[in-house]
Image (cartoon, rainbow, N blue to C red; front, side):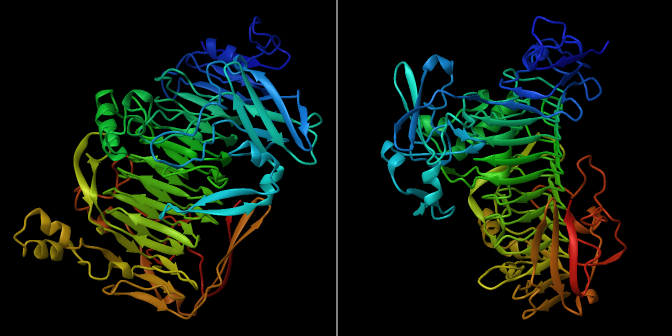
Length: 640
């Protein structure tokens, strides 16, 4: 028989956990709740790391943790500090015994791990005054400096540029840790920390089981914040502020999640399949250890029956240093939708090649749709084994980059999205279908002939082979490309010189006698037709039907109004003359390397017959993500 347990700030952990006699801590409820039970948490602030002790048994016999209806429930990885001593001027300090932190002292633990490329000695700790996180100074002297130099790292050249940020002077901390104590210094200028809310993060996570295999758990309706999460590369344990820890069937929904030092929601791997070995052992590349981690995961039972199939929906996630959602291997067969993600990786205290709003490796059959992603270092980054993945009807704006697909062989689908960053798309993959998108921004297309990555039996974690990224084998149909002054590579002309059918490709390859080397030299086929190219965007030279108006400026804008977002653009008079076809499994054809069709995650036929809003499309529709785009002015609500 299912039980209902209650937790409240006026409760006690030696009580029964009823509505009349609630528990005081969520962890007490987590210790007794079993399959089918519900834990209802009432209004208040809970400073604890919730560690579920029991798993649900199925999608219908899950354990549900939920905030009481209409009540604000906050779970924090931080503690409030009130004992501040003025040192000099606007600099204050507090000294804490090291046992205050237990076995995990974030002010001693550094940002560390594979693919960390820039970290000037910064740690997992953080200080928050009235909810705003401070910057960690590199040296004690910076606490007293009139300005602080911020190192901004270019993603590609890995060069750093110093810029003065006067805002940082107001919000700086520095810590010293000795054998017995931790002393934290802050410079908050005109703020008196003894009169304000000052918090420091002390716990690694807010809601994350210590054991693996804690299946079928729902986490709903909470605010969760201020966790000292570590760096989460694909070759290490990947703890997040909240997450399933190598389990199956979690639902994380309707939460507000913010101020995770690194990652907010993790649906990634655990430590036994690799733990930063490239950084610690220094004997092999991260690439090689990542290959090994996949084989180790298979030996440990990486299957649909054991991990993945998570649902992440209707969350607001912001102000995190690395990711809103991260995952390697454990993310398979999941859905991520209706989330609002922003301010990820923009504080710039550290940098590595794993930062994005959503960063997934091995996103097999993962469906990512109807998310609003803006003001991030990178919007979505799909890296390795992007197969059966669909990125659909997402809104991207004001990101440094919007979408990056890397070293994958498909099939994957990117459809009905709005991408508007100056740097809109990195395609370092093959076997993709880009259909009915609006893309305004630079597009970069690259081969990766030095890194072979796995591909799989369709809809399975079973490996079928390895391949380098030859470039091509891509499909572009019904897209609206918009150039702009100073932007390069917008459109599909970077495929000029590629073959235009599998038959042509096979004939050309077989003209060579060099066996595998021929496949490195002959460009894979691309399938490109019925796209619109405006304001300098340029078409593939062999595209049979398109609309190209180089001088027409659509004056594209993304306009925010409270909780709503609108798209404004102008389109030329002949815009409706180009009508796109509905694409499907039948029309997109199989991918060459994987020898797999574009299908739904359940193996059924894929039919792209719904627009950005989910409205049905007729057989012939205007290009772009929405049915109702028309010549002249368009002002359309795209969120809210």
